Amino acid sequence: TPKGSLFLTGPVGDLDFLGEALLQYGSDSDFYNGRDYGDRLFLSATGGLLYTDGGDRLTLLGQYWYDGVAQSYDNTDIIGHHRGGASLSKGFLLNREAERSSVLTASLLWLGDFTDLSGMVKGGLEWEPLDHGALGVTALYRYGSDLTSYRFQGPGVIAPEFETGVYAKLGYGVF
Image (cartoon, rainbow, N blue to C red; front, side, top):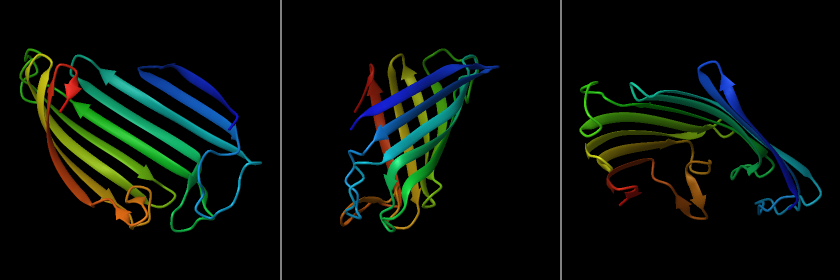
């Protein structure tokens, strides 16, 4: 599928801006309605703002994404989805003067699809007892009907509404 893209990044005051546009002729996607869109132009675009304060380990991110090729599973005539995301991460929760080790960080992530009213919220706590080593716990909640972007994972496979997890990082990997 022929594609062309444009990327923009730069500062906007204390914020960092990112933007991307993608124009394509036809689609690599398999559409559920069986139609062939090989002769159609599709536009996808995203824009977002990032704020980070390294001293307090505070990071805020907001992003909007129009996915011009996305298709609804329950209404196959709807092509093109409006999506958004936001993230908040705050470190040094217990002791601002702490060394890099023994840092406790909380994070919250939201991803949503405005078109089918689905999404997910993920929260987590991470403790860094060692340089390049951390332990964490997460909780994930998905909302929306069974045939929406964040619940439907394929024919007969629906993602669970709620999940929890634990993880360990050593070096730069996760296991």
